[in-house]
Length: 559
Image: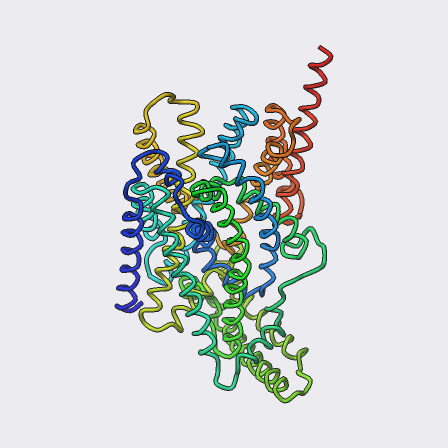
């Protein structure tokens, strides 16, 4: 990075933290600190909900998904709008009228204390893991760009997040998220214009679209039902819909956003806003990745996008022949791409079979390079998807804009992590500390506890990211797999609470345990896509809980 990039990067980070602290000033009670005094307008809540999701993983990994696998990942979100409508009609008014700080506080009102405690612990486990992964995502990728260690970046982001989140509570992070999302949209738009401008002069935008389609990078919908396929229409609508219901309806990091609303109507609007914006935003991000792929058809790209591993691999004896093969495969692919574009413009039948054969040959040569890295790591699977977009940014964006995009990636990680540690602290204080450990203290005592637990969970996320979240792979996939291991159980217990009046606390408690056992069994012993874990877990919770509740009623009636 150049001097101007460093100036822009640090100026943006300083502004964001300062703005968050400024807007969070006055969070002097537990209600103001955890729920912003229920003063948030719909657009701030909506942008904050998007910001919690639009983490650094969105920038780093979703663009990479578009590059290597096309736009079919967007099917993952097809169930989200339906879920938002359902939650607007059910969860939003129920939680608001219950006057609760957390979703799990409501479970005690509906069932009992043990169910509340169990589900709170499930949330703390799941969200604690996700916080570490979300913090690790930019650190591992940015370390290669900035030349810093990933641990140093992790600590820096963690300290910035803890500073304004512990200081100003949810009000600080919500308004910081508004600024972050504004800058994300700006950075994405700039990136798309740059990649289109970087295309060769004889390749038009129409040519780029045609080539992306010919390479199956615009394949948005797969109608084939396959339980082992992560991304098809049915897994997105059903599995993704269940995941969205669980995430937005049961995960405190999201529920807490719309609990800050001025009214039920404002909270509903925030979810509807998310329903409208989320899919187009993901399509836009994936499309940028697809266009970066088209650019790579004509401009040489690294054999390995992770620069540190690429340097190490280049020192091996097997590198040079693989590199020579790669260069030949690139030239063949480039010539085939030009022929397809030329044929399309002239109205002739394009030689798609030759183009796709050249694509396969290029992919095979790059796979040989990746295998060199795998051998260096003892056979561990290596995937450099998370470095593709950063390589593009570093190579093509002018001075200043590189710093801006890197700063946005930093702040995206800060936004998602701040929401996670704030919700973790809220559940820890409200559902565990105040409910079971230290009762009857004054508001100031619990406010101090909230700040201290925010610091604790921030430190936990940093430690987990620095020490535990190692490995390679597409991070956007990994973080959703972690969530799906727990969300089915959470969703099932809230389905019981909202719609099954005959379910009791004991049934709900054992239903959650059975649901989690079913999910982990599916993950360990089957090849079913992780999206279906949410369906399996939810159904098992409901069935087991209703069966146990009915058994208890029958037993009591015959006693």
